[in-house]
Image 1 (cartoon, each protein chain N blue to C red):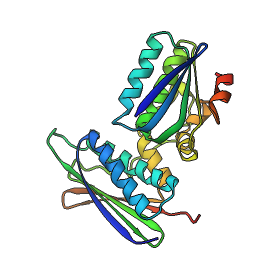
Image 2 (image 1 turned 180 degrees about the vertical axis):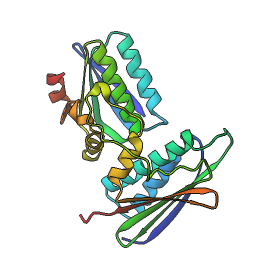
Image 3 (image 1 turned 90 degrees about the vertical axis):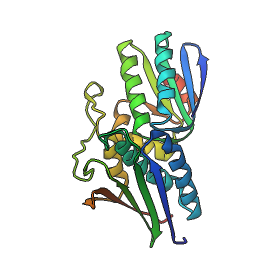
Image 4 (image 1 turned 45 degrees about the vertical axis):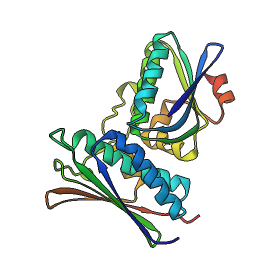
Amino acid sequence: MEIIENQKEDVSIFKLNGRLDSNTSPVLEKKLVSAIENGTRNMVIDFENLDYISSAGLRIILKTTKDLKRTDGHIVLCAMQDYVREVFEIAGFDTFLPIFSTVDEALTKV
Amino acid sequence: MPRKNVSIKLKNRISELERLGQKLQAFGEGIGLSKKCLFQIHLAVDELFTNIVKYGFADHNLHYIAVTLSHRDGKISIRVEDNGIPFDPAAKQTSELKDPLEHCKIGGLGLHLVKKIMDDIAYERRGGKNVITLVKYIPHT
């Protein structure tokens, strides 16, 4: 699991690489918690290079969404493989989480 | 597609997920599974394995979890066996998670996913072991 962080104006973009499961999700959780503690309010999570996600990964996304909501922040997801997106849909997360096709589109909506 | 069987013996440690992923990848590539189908099988086995490691044993001793996959006649059969506390994931109720965000409960999410992406799930307690059997039909492409 590799996470590349970029800043574009007031939006933090986190690009995920590899697998997000119970083994690797603590790394992402630590990164996102620390970003919020350091003042990040708007986030884009880029899934383009994420090959795998389990419920452990979904939990981190849900927790981050709740944490940001408490601070009037926003989170937007983008560039998922179709089978990753399907997992978000089965979990019902697509009803409250915006998912876009590209980073550029996500940046206009966050 | 050729017939193929594979058996994987895993310790009850979350770090084993990496080896599980590599073994499943090799199995999927060996029989020419689509990325989507391989992903779904990986997810189902991961969720069951992770549940067993986290909640399946009353002690902290070393235990083994056996995962067997077989490919035949357009379907993948998966068996997951452990000698932990009796637990029937097929009988456990999992709910739809369509509630508003504030009320969204995340417990049981893993099993909910397993039931939605697999075509069949069955459980039996046999010889002091939990034996879970999953079936995934391979879609024609």
